[in-house]
Image (cartoon, rainbow, N blue to C red; front, side, top):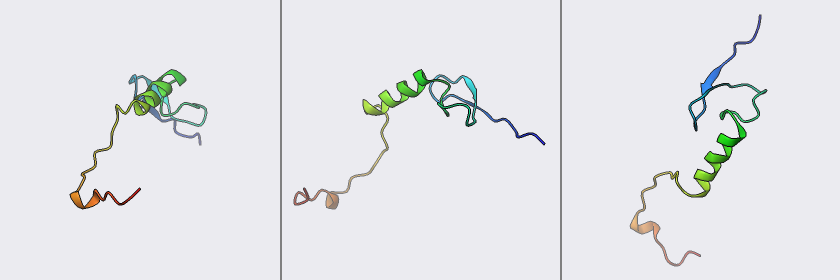
Length: 62
């Protein structure tokens, strides 16, 4: 019995690529797309929304 091959879309360029150990850039299709995504995080273009509450803003904390 052969293993099922899974294909996914690259989160950066939407190109279909094989999601397997042979794809060292997974889930991306290439090193280029992986680096573009990393740059987006580094430039803070992606953010995880967090609610800030007044009680969390303690100025005594360093």
